Structures are given as structure tokens and as C-alpha cells.
Length: 154
Image 1 (cartoon, rainbow, N blue to C red):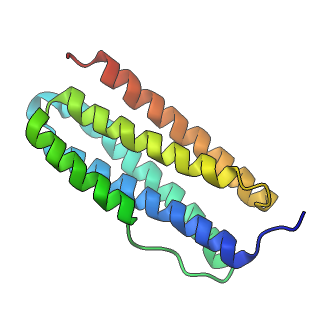
Image 2 (image 1 turned 180 degrees about the vertical axis):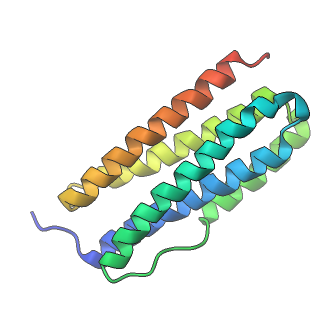
């Protein structure tokens, strides 16, 4: 089985970089929308922003090592999701549970993107290892958001 080319690897990594950029933008938006009563979520969301910066930079280092240019923007799907979240918030408000549910949906999408990348059998082993490690960190973040959402009043 032939390993995928550096250009294809870079395309996949840049997609994940864009998804991490979406995650950063989503948590920055969530921070702006937090009511004062939910200030306890600020360090959680800030940590997730920092985590995505680190994940994105590690992916970017691999893209550059492969001779590519690191993605700097967000994905079209991420922009559409954020627009949908804004519309949805108009009808459901900016309560703690809604904010956390939107964050959990984002985490679900991020995990799926990583899994889709890992499902490519021809992915170079060193990239597969990096993505597996990053996915494990993202799963922990997902589970934290899910726990917080489950604890929020309905």
C-alpha cells in the first residue's frame, strides 16, 4: 500500500488546522456571550482556546516540514455552523446549557474530523501518531464540556 503524498498530507493537515481555527473562534465567541453568572466557564473556554492554538501549531509545523504553507483561516463549514448557532441562540437564548450544548456539538465535529483523517489507511505513521495523540486530548475536552452541559439546569 502506497503512502499518500506530502501534498495530500498537507491538505489533510490544513483541513484540521482550519477546524482548530474554527474551534478557537467558537470558544472566543462563547467567551463573549457568557453572562456574568457563568464566569466559571471562562477558564475552561480559555484553556480550550490555548489547546487549539497548540494543536494547530503542531499541525502547522508538519505542513511546513513537508514544504507546505499552514492554513490561517477557518473552514466554510465552521462559518456556517457559527451562523446557525447565532440563529439558534435567537430562539433559545444564551443560557449556560445552550452555550455548552453548542460547544459540545463543535467538539463532536472536531472529533469526527480527526477520526475521518485517521481512517485514511495510507496516512504516514508519524502523522497518524500525532493525530491520535491530538484526538485523545480533544476527547478529554469533549468529555469535560459534556459533563458541564449535563450538570447545567434545563
